[in-house]
Structure formats: structure tokens, C-alpha cells
Length: 490
Image (tube, rainbow, N blue to C red; front, top):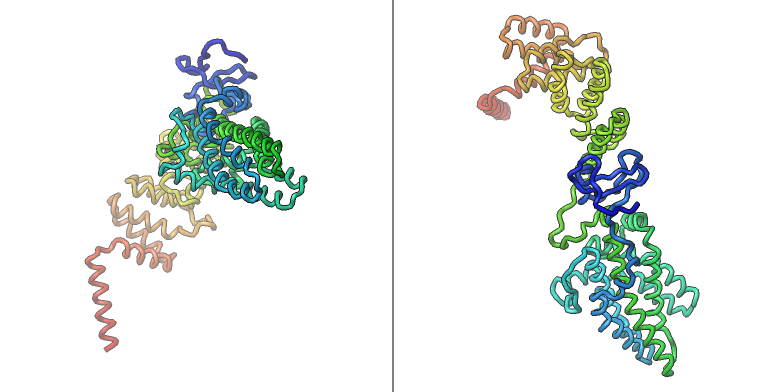
């Protein structure tokens, strides 16, 4: 679909649209997906879930082949890069030619990485040969130039055998993997990035539509340079052929480096590459467990704007299987269940939520949910004894003493799976004594627990005294114990 003017977002009329879904004719802006411009995501239509088109997207790397071939950066490289290749090809002795090829290989590799980074970050400043020999350029070049070493070793082995088939195989492997290796090197600022199979796979998957033309361009450049170095003989026409092949190969190698950078820039969002920002000033990318749930919440909000509550509830339920502990996802899911369900159903939902939180040791989160829904559910208490016990202890720490006492004293001895009944009743007696002002009932309750659960009562009392005894008395007890131990030893 061609837009003659800047379209406006369907949900935010004051915002220009950045994405368009042809199937639904839906225009979206950056406010529809929080941080969408900055984060490495593939935008999907909130209605049909198909991938949407980015308006004013970067064209394919080789769509502007004339601009790519005649850019000032490439023209400046033409003054020396193909010339060096031609000089190496013009050396008649094969041994001297290969010896000269080694430093040229290092120079070509470092320059190619600089070209790719310059294009990937859309830098506007000049890039000169002297950049390679500055302190930053030297450091960056030493970290990145050896991304081409595996391909050079492959070519050396193929040349040593003298087999045409092996040379063709080496060319095919280099053309297939070199663009991904270069992009991985630029993304990580180190050649070790190409040793990560997961990153290479990610690059191949997301750039597959534009990868083949760039690979063919690299195949042409590598083939011409290999031909220039391996062409035998010292006759003038063979030397001239080597020089021409070196000139063409050097020029294509320059264009290939820039094309790889353009390819990385075009797919920068999905590859988590913050192009356009200097490498020293790149912001640290947020953790996936931070921004993925935020995007999911935004998706659900757009569904609610469209009036699709059931779809939003189902979507949030699927999201919670990936991020079960995210507070915002859980909060919005609770609200949806509350709006679209009856009170008994919502009570059962909260029962399951509190049970999961208590099972993971997150009693504070369970208490937050209970306090948020207490007024709506009318002083509701969970059915699970373990959940009620942990929740009551947390509420007691927050000052809800009457509620905590009601939850603890209401625990039933008929629940065979609950093993903290004595502790719960002793905690209820403590709350009665300390906070509710009824020491007589507290003493009766302690006496009842001591008669029926004597061992558990002794353990609870010992633990409670250890936590609540003043430090001075602890030191006195320790000193007395040490004195008694010393006397016994004497």
C-alpha cells in the first residue's frame, strides 16, 4: 500500500503512524507499543497478529546499488584498496605474491569491518585510511580483523591442493557464511561474536530475504581476489589479468563491506543492534524479563481498546505462562478476571494465585493481593490452610492483627495435610496477648496447645524466645554458659 501523506495512528490521532497492516488497514504509532522504536521486536498487528509493514523502512541493501557503488566512502577506498590488490597481483613470483597477501589480508579485513560498522550505524563523519592506525582504530581492528581467518585458512588449504572443486567449495562456504560472520563481529565489537551459533542463526533467519544478493556480491569479490592471487605465469597478459581481477575484486570487496552494514542497519530492531548510536555511547539494552512483559501488557491494552476482552484475557493467560511473576501482567489479568467473572469465580482465581505465591515463598505479594481485593470480597480468607497461615503471619507484620488472628484461630485440625496447626494457634495466642489485649484467653489457648501438642509447643517457645530475647540477656546467657563449661573442664 502506498501512502501519499503521513498517516495517523488509529488509536492516537495526534501521532504519526510508524507501522501499517495491509490486511486490517490498521495504522499504529510508537505509543501503541511502548519502547517499540528502541527495542528489538518484530511488530505484529493487534487484530490479525500478522507482521506489519514499517512505513518509510530502509530499502534492501542492493536496491540502491548505484549509490552504494559511487558513495564518497567507496570512491575514497577506490584510491588505494583495489590499487593494493593490483600491486600484489602484479608480483610475478608466486611466493612473493602470497607473502605480500598476508599483510594485505589483515588490512583488507580491518578495513571491511570499519566499513560495515560505519554503514550499520549510519555514521556521517569521514572514514579515512588513517582511521585504521589511530589508537581506537588499532584496538578495534585487532579485536575484529581475525573474523576472516577461518575463511582465509579454508582458501589456503584449497589452494594448496590445487583442486578446482575444492576452491569452488571454499568460495561457496565463504559466500554463505562471511556476511553473517561480519555482522556478528560488528554487533559484538569483537570477532568472537561469530563463534556464537545462536547469534549466527538469528542473523540468517532475520536477514534471509536480503541475504542472497549480499552473499553473491561477496562471492564475486572473493572469487576475483582469489583468481588474482592464484593466476599462474609471468606473461604480460596473465599479469594484466591479475591486475584487472585485483582492481575489480578490491572494489567489490569495498561495496560488499558497505552492503553488509546496510543489511545490519535495515534489520537492526529484530537483531537488537542499536544502530545510529556511537559504540562508546550505546545504551545498555534492557533485560528481556523487563521489556517483554511490558510489550505484552501493551498488546492486551490495544485488544481492550478494540473491545475484545476474551481475547485479551486469553492472551494474558498465555503470557503468564512465560512470565508468571511479572507484577503488571498479573495485575491486569486480575482486573480482567474481576470484570468478566462472578465473585465466586474471581475468589477461586485469587485462591490459586495466593497458593502459587505462598508456594514460592512470596508471602508479601500474596498479602498485597489480599489487601487490594479485601473490600471487594468482604473479608475473604483463603481455603488452603498453608496459604491462610503464611498470609496471616505477613498481615500480622503489617499491623492487621485482628484479621491475622481470625485467620489463624479459624484453622481446622481436620486438615491432615497441614502440619503447622500448633504453631498457628500459638501465634494467635501471641497476637491476643500482645495486640488485642486479652491475656487470659491467650493463656488458655497456650495451655490447650501445650496439652495437645507438647513437643511442637516446646519447639515454638524455644524459637520464639531465641528471636525475641534481648541481646544483653543473650550475652549474659552465653557468658554463664561459658563459665559453666570452664568450671566443668577444671
